[in-house]
Image 1: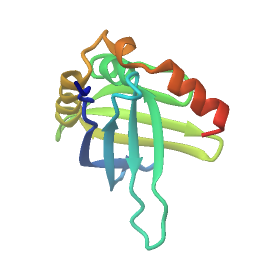
Image 2: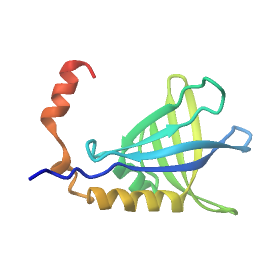
Image 3: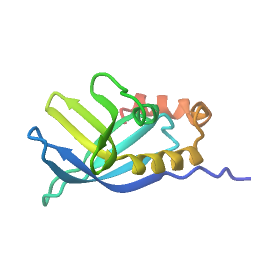
Image 4: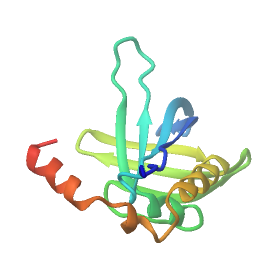
Length: 143
């Protein structure tokens, strides 16, 4: 009998990069959840310029869940609810040595994405999907 592996969840969306002067620029992005990495979500920011490379950020799925309703995170990734005249959003603040960025994400997009991830790996059941041996082997192999 073969084992059926859960599928990856991926959602293409448009975020808004909030500039220091409060103007916002659209940014194409993908939200990704891989059951092989059950505690994490990944956001891939697509480069619009020719030859530009996409930038990927990974952080805890639970951080997004908490950030839907209250401020969450410290350090490099912070998430909080953000109501605007245009509707309900979630603020996603990313910090690195290269700079900081603040994104506005439609709350409804995150809610649908997270619901789909819970179909693949239920909340609180992540440890059942974690393959520690494979993770250790990847670390030792330098991948």
